[in-house]
Length: 590
Image 1 (cartoon, helix red, strand yellow):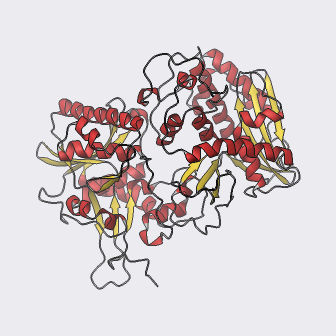
Image 2 (cartoon, rainbow, N blue to C red; image 1 turned 90 degrees about the vertical axis):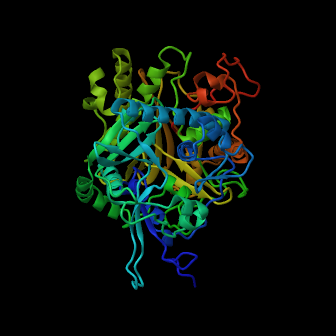
Image 3 (cartoon, one colour; image 1 turned 45 degrees about the vertical axis):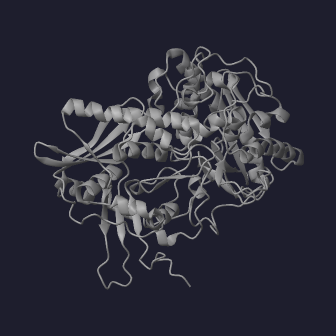
């Protein structure tokens, strides 16, 4: 038997914690977080590499590495990346798959914005920051002779710089972000871990790492340059900075003497980081896509054939009904969305379209907050917003007209709130992801109902659709328009959700004039047949496609990713594209 606590060369497999390990994202799985850190805990093979890069930060990092550590111009760095259809490239030990032309366009803009922000800070403070290729790691190696001890490494995500400021040695970590630098922050625990690594860590021998990257990614401890901070000595001060890849802005998250960083870590980072190794209940969701212990997981349901695909030759991916709609409209748009590229408000959209979209998101966010209250209670007249200033919790600052429309939708919901009359102690899941594995397609299927509740002895699925449009079509056209309902029917049919007499899939359409509640029976044979046609029709073409080519047409009108798209010329798109169908847009985030 092999000892999974040791690597291929007999060394003990490392436990490697990142600064991001100190927090668990909403809906994240504690077991996944632990197995990501503990290389000895992984059992499943790594997923096949995709033919096109599926990580925007990895492509951006490769471009910046070539510029900052290899001295290339930005244009030359971008041209050094592999072209679609080519093999993965190795950049300073990091594997980079060929980027989609749209991703490359974003990476070029993001790198320029990042470098401009760096130059802007230099112009303001007069400090010349030197890029550090040997990223810093705090490494704890077991004592010689300790037979069962494991090596530990604590790492910080970001780009490192070193410089002198008035005689002080400074280490700075810049964390690239896709939006404005002041558009958010990092949790204190993550900042504390990053500052601690800067203050106490040593540099990894990047040349040695690049020589055998698979060895170190597989669990062998990083090769270190020195244990005492390298030739320049340990830092006197450390800084953590958010750096925008959109508008070149920067925001300082932490700036203090190195000795204070250790105290900050002790108070805010140590226990959250330790919690990453505790694990906990398994929580099926997006983490199941690349989890190293998903095989045999008792919490991830299996739904063979739910997508109607019998082909395991493609790279493992995740699919949702919203993604299926985006793909049908334009494969490139769906790809850019999955990469998390920043979007722009659509140009030439109908007047009020952006406000209506924000209103609909705010209505759904408010209902999610109301339904999650403890003790659990139904929505009532007292929950209806009074005016524009009553939407602050949803991060929405509406005008009077939009505020009135949003309040009218909340009032309409009060009349059909599913929590009204629900027995005390009933199971209610608010905004929780439902995940299932389709082993025949090697795809993780994801869905997120607004409410999943156990009512009258059966589970009911409810989605909320705020709109000012007309009423939805009758039941026969409902699932084609709202494929999330069709997927819900198949999740019941495949046993992912318990199907009992009385189980229902519901769509609550909210307009300023009232609520329209539509219901389909997931146990009815005709409903299941229609649901399969809808889901299989969306999933099949998506699963076969690996190129994500743009399909210019009407969908370009409101596409937020147009400036990255290689097919966008800036001209008005045609009114009609052969084969396009009305209503192919769908809701971007569902």
